[in-house]
Image 1 (cartoon, protein in one colour):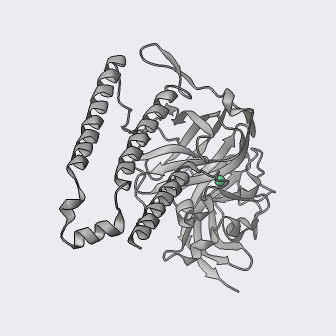
Image 2 (cartoon, rainbow, N blue to C red; image 1 turned 30 degrees about the vertical axis):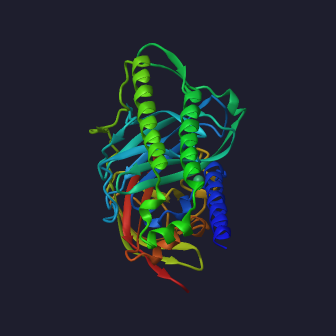
Length: 414
Ligand SMILES: [Cu+2]
């Protein structure tokens, strides 16, 4: 009976080992990456992305494309999220389907973290090189220390061709050209294999002996010392010395082969240039805002005052990357993702040109399925139900003004 129990224990151990190994090797492809599950307040009250452009919708392997645009660092940044003092401009894609060949904020190369100021607008550009064929959702993204990855709008991009033709050549500071895609790959496999093999040998040695139940009985009987023999000690010592020798020797030979190495560069770039947005002459006061759950519509009462010298109209409300437009005033021509574009989603009770010096209180409705599809309506269940977004006004000459709004949102269930 005891022998049988021990056999079962051994078999279960081996089965567990196989399962864990298999789990490590099995990596299914993810088709989406959770942009909709990021809290609505995070998407609405942190980074406002606008004027976005994905330069291509289809790109062959090894070719490049750019994503460019602007982002406004929201003034009413939530208290629960760390300020973007250490942030990194990134791209939200399912794994390395592209490589990032370069990224710029305000014309400056930003391979490192940057410090951003609340209330400023920045211009950015990311250069991507296609690597793995497929249809990929490509998002803008900003990683904020203490805030996590803040994801922006995503657009589907198709990569064509074959991954085996992908190359990533770089010239090192010592003048050698290497292909980073395959550089020293054999070495990586060798070391993984070697340590995995040593680990297996170590386990095999101990698994041969009586395991869980007999050991437990021996320990309980006060005979724990008898479980480890003199030979066991010698084998263990052999493993320890062998490991140290392998590490020391390989380190010495690596140092000899590569005498010049530099550490990976990290650090913080300060003083990133923001853009001077045109001075605003429009004033907006939100009187109240409600979200009607059955109608999937947000209704705002706002008082608009035009202090400029040209009459203005409201053309767009942009929140969390969803653009509600009044087609009579503003039309998107950039190829913005369909699911984030409500071309006629903005209704203004009176959107006739507002003359200079005039003030008007209007009802503005932003309605689209995107409220639910993008789970922005979840906002109403937050303990601090506030919404925020950008309003774009256009004057007679077509000049645009950007106004930020930030107000409490009251849900209505009828
Ligand atoms: Cu996505």
